Image (tube, rainbow, N blue to C red):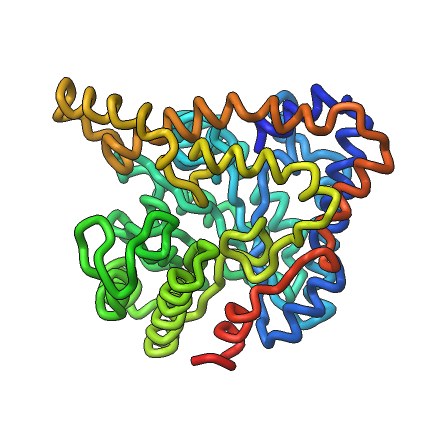
Length: 416
């Protein structure tokens, strides 16, 4: 996100840049969205936030003027429709994990290496706690999304530091603590704290874009409902052994557009919901809105935004730059020689967190190719008028989205 925003700022200039993103945020979640979520019988929205909305890297520990305006608005809309919210700090300064979704343009989680980054996050959580300490429709604070710290020794002590600071301001709201290694590993959690919920992320491997048939084999392993349940129980062993609450903060398959394949993905979802119900586990599916990969709502193809970017999105997909929704099938002529070189020359190279092949993929697809694509995306906005920019941003309004009907039926229990 930071690379894209920097590129758009250069293309648009500050005035038009602010106009576009302010209009985008105003339209992305409105009363129509809250009404729809309430109509489904769902009662919780996890609001993912980027620290950059609240402070500037060149002016740390100073909350921006109006920083809370949009968060206040969304929390208020949800509250008016009897929907709780959990504030999820999804992107931290210095990056809490190695992947793109922490707004990380590199491959290193520098947050864990610099105390100043950690101090800034503590300051931000103190400001959030001060702001919402008396807001009953905020269910709690999801302190760090998907931490991944190579030594395994720093996450829990830092959680203790955050907990102690927040509790001096807000003793009442629930704190949600995600496991290390992308919310899957609680081995270094050594204490149980009051009014804390421990949360894992339960993504099913056959539900990723490169997943195989379900039931069936993915990456040499057989997956069925029992396998998924086994993996969930393994991720949740800490919580079960200590008899503490579990919240699955993220789960959900990626849909391919192939009806036969997507039937399997819906079965994955139903199997997961069945064992959540079996173990009385609360959950929050990822995600509400996207561009057609996974969410219950996706933008229709006739909006000004989709007309502008559709060819670019196809190019991005063909180059394998979308980590969540594309494969490297069209660039194997680049990837395979690199993979063979590293296997031959560096057989012991096993970088954290996912090993050699994932590291090569991250560098080539999600750093080098993705970085090279950013100017192409930003150039699409060159010369657009204020009204054209506002029309693009309004494409993200509820009225311009299409429901994934079967996903809605499964989540509401109409399809078992």
